[in-house]
Length: 160
Image (cartoon, rainbow, N blue to C red; front, top):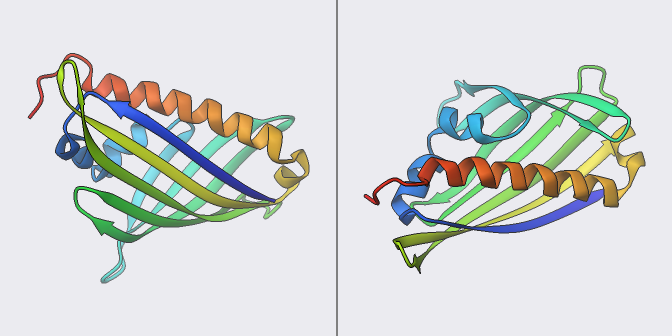
């Protein structure tokens, strides 16, 4: 099952502030719902991470071991990454790509940034049997939680 997600988020922070957050892996991972651990993969010339994430989707409790590889970046505008993962028994798998773009905007309180997030994720295994609607609904809920977490990072802070 192919899941396409597209979300956008207005942040009361400069593009550079948001970029610094995106590139601070530990800080960003702490804002992502369900992410339990993130560790850099030591591989020459490649920026990659191992992550463990878990969630309950429909009747399934899922814990995935993920690999995320940065495919391209254009600071402070764009970041692309590829991901793949599976549960410990191989019953649920996913592969896909993420694309995050940042563009400056203005808000009444000063500089702001529009963050656009797009993901194309192929879900295989038991999770795929749930269908696109519940998967998309859960992804939307998780993105809303992430949005609240990231907005809280910049709430009430002076812009730099």
